[in-house]
Image (cartoon, rainbow over all chains, first blue to last red; front, side, top):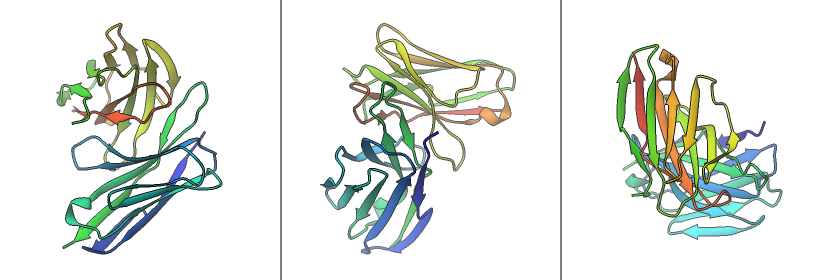
Length: 112
Length: 112
């Protein structure tokens, strides 16, 4: 079945640094979603991407839908301590089933 | 606050027992999804409902079942519980099956 890979698995960065993470798949998706999960809470939607090549920003976050439709990227600029958490990508197929598949996550730690 | 409500927040039970987890979707959302997240694991898709009907099944065990009621709330039933069933169970909802998912804060199930 469909599977997503995320890299890096974890990151430790200094406050103020920019962050890049990506998500790849062997399958094509029609929608890419990025979520952030804080400890003990549910994932919160950050950005949704619907078209190949699309570049979308949400504050300091920017995400791109890869041209091949098999990958997506998330960048965080000028990181701050509250950016700490696990970032999940998710791919959605627009089929009769519309399943949403999640990657294993990238754990981000920000050192003040 | 995502608008998705899950109860109970915590559940501790013994092996062999049966539990029911409840989810109320956001107002207006017709689609409900259930995910399992084990310790330090990603989100594993269990099952999806749309307007009362099952739409997609993931890696859901035969011991688990779910349903969505006419008022659109959903219940996930877990029976013959095993230690390995201990996990966070998340419910998510979306307006329709091709819209981004919005997650509740989960039910933490501990099987002893």
